[in-house]
Image (cartoon, rainbow, N blue to C red; front, side):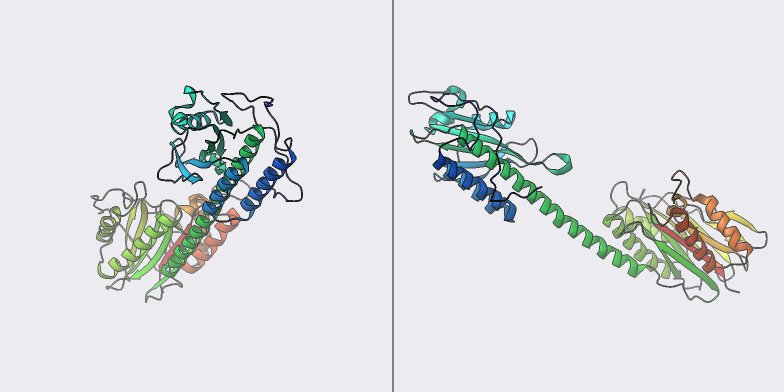
Length: 459
């Protein structure tokens, strides 16, 4: 939006033909505010320039609206000025500012018929009531208030992309017999109303900027909390080699992973993915991760851990939100117990046969049903050079940088697992090469969070 300069007052286009109920002598149907007597011209131009300057400089919307309505009253010679605005699109307009003549927001009367007509037609209007006339089409309030002159113009704030900004009217009236509003008054009045609309839009944009800054800070805090909960290094648990890797698509992620050593000395890896992105999923992520860490310290059975977590989260999660999760527990003798709640199936590199085993057993995602009982545990056995890999769907769904219709997919995973496995690489090398391969595949672009966790036996 260009800024107006006081040195060159803007030309105000002719106002649409106004509707009058009593025509004045020698009154043109449409005229610009610069085509009237020099003295009144100067007052009008000064009022308009003052409104422009205040709209550009003021950050206090309430004071600005008061000032513009005061200017409308003073410049047109009206006794009262009222600004009415919708609280919500389509609702009845409510008095926002009432100035002059002892008006107040709590008890103010005006020509509701004129206001209703302008609200409906979105067209400027003025009316002069001659002595002895009783214009029924103006409504009873004009007669009751003994009004002689009424002027009303629409106010339409843009409201951004939705176009649903607040609508309303700017209204003035007078009981003085000598006061008659003319087309020049109406043109100035219409211009002032347009600057009220600009002020309302500026206030909306300023509020949006504040909300964006607040949301950005909330996301940064959520990210800091999440980063603090994520393992900062590979776990040092006797008898195991393990590695994890994570990249968020946004500040606040839905993915998480963790390693927990149980009382029996087993190493448990968890990989979770909360549906959605932003602060809501991030809070659920932090809650789930903290809960899992606490449960796994005292509960050995992965199925019981998921039942406890599901009971806890189901009452907290919003409708439609859920958590996919893998809890993979590896004992020191290589026995594996995996429970999969709606997550992509883990893979095991079998060093002896040079093959990849897929653990397909899975159950419902966490949070979808408070009464669901998790009990399907998939059992396996790790050999000395075998590697268990758990991953999130962000890895599978990574898009090729130059060919968006190509996905990294399970085929990409298997290719890297096989290559690393045949070279005798362990969990740390597998995670390093897999993460590098998927980031190269998508050229660093991430539509979803990506997580990798690998576990093998040490020695």
